Picture 1 (cartoon, rainbow, N blue to C red):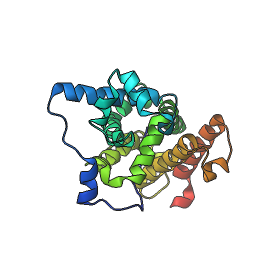
Picture 2 (cartoon, rainbow, N blue to C red):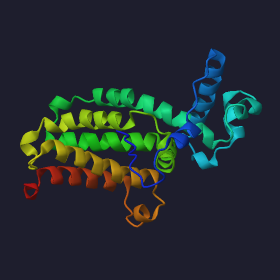
Picture 3 (cartoon, one colour):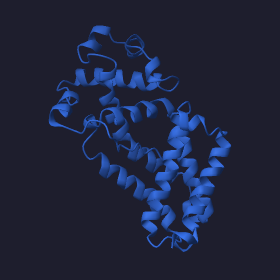
Picture 4 (cartoon, rainbow, N blue to C red):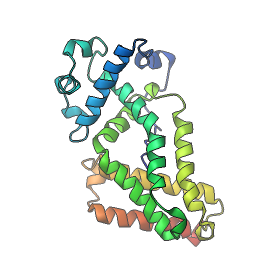
Length: 232
């Protein structure tokens, strides 16, 4: 699961700030296709390198469009980010649903379910590292530019994953199992995000561990927190 949280202490959302980023979708199909080609090219490039290491020339070359066509729509490479984030936002729910459908969850016991959800988090962060890193940075730096309905969608995605754990209520010692599951998934997602998307940051680099050790530690943390009798 890839849940980019948007809590931030940066400049609050304002009508003026929101207008800076929000533009009406192109009316003509050709313009929409060109916009999508630029975004798709950027997503392909983000498979192997950071957004900072990608140039406008890289994007237009892969998109097969003239550079003037890019600057007719965007004042800079960074101005493409709202469109990239919207595409990520729109594709997150179907992507998560497809990944959940791959696993026969009813056959898993509580500990196997916890491990399966941790593996789901880690796999998506690893596979889409540079795209999700760019999305996470954008969400924190420009909260006013985020799609409407973002909070509700994220809550729904947490609910989908939480349902899998709540099948095993007998293992959850917390007096409010739903809240405990939400926090447990938030804990796993936050640690996985920082370790995999920002490994060079001070807190992540100060706690070195292999990916396998990270996975085992997160499984242990999730199962231990939910089963902890002290939570009562």
